[in-house]
Length: 181
Length: 181
DNA sequence: TACAATACAAAACAGTTTGTTCGGTATACA
DNA sequence: TGTATACCGAACAAACTGTTTTGTATTGTA
Image (cartoon, rainbow over all chains, first blue to last red; front, side, top):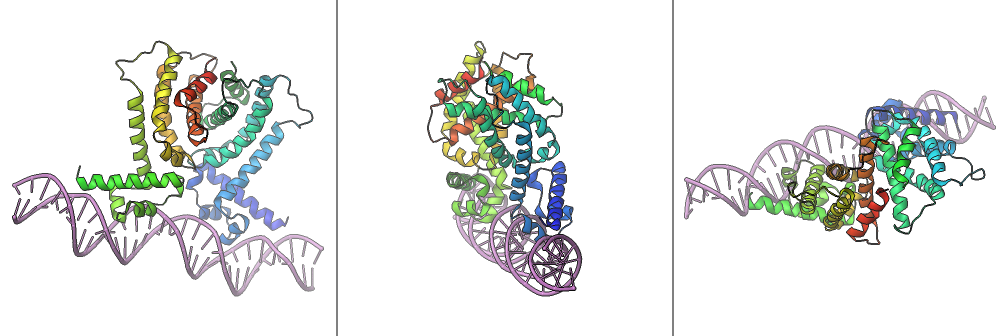
């Protein structure tokens, strides 16, 4: 990749992150990003078609980071003790999400949370599918999955917005306590 | 209220509802509402300062309807059997929400769900506070509340978006099953 | 019935923001 | 060194918002 490209791309991301610390996504204009990154207008649009695509890219980066670090390879997987294992994995995910706290505040406040959440829930759905072994017949499978994924995603949102700080392990434990019967 | 005012107000709401059946809130422009309602531009802005305020009004209407019909007066309240009573109330809420299905689809799809959800969760928080009697010390109270309210709100979103239709009672039962230990 | 208040229509307006285009300049890479 | 290409900056059209103004129609009331 051309050195110049990488430089401006980084500048855009940095500017975006900086702005996200101050205000929610939807209140940020492309022009502000351009000014903050100190690049030409046409340059921005050469890299990203829209502001949403920039957000998408940032989300992809974050998830790639979070879920690659947090989850073991398929091969070395241990499915044995379902829920206990799930708690562990969720802890890891939370641990890595915590590193993006400042950006996530801006992404998750305001109306724009949806894009992030929708990505996030896809990853989570995978995770929960693998570690859920108590599909009971009492409740439709897809509802159960939706409930767990949704409430965990909400848990994260609450955690990020919260001033009082719980550790990733604590939060995972809280969540599991409300899930297991 | 002036007969003319009521007429245009109704026209605006009707147009808004009609558009919401076809597309998500954020893709609807003020101009479209104006055209659909067949009123003058200035007339719209005489009634509502912004599109968001129109949405707010509609939400208020819906909630007033839903929670007034669905919930008994304070006086005749029966707090006795916590969770069983909660299930009943949630069933009622769902029953009345169902009557607004077509609008809710447009309100809950897309990025704009936040405004509705934030209102909704306020009402729900009240409800859950009253009927929750199993605050355990294992988990922070505000987290427990957030988890229950959040996951029920998500349940509703799922239910509204779903093609397969469950009855209000069924859905309430599903939800309670996942909540109670 | 006549009058005063006010709700409405229509059109023009300024202000934002977006996304595109284009000619010229600077930088990277081979 | 040279060629490709990434960048700059300015100008542009387009969409949408919210305001203002002027004139008309309708309402509730004296």
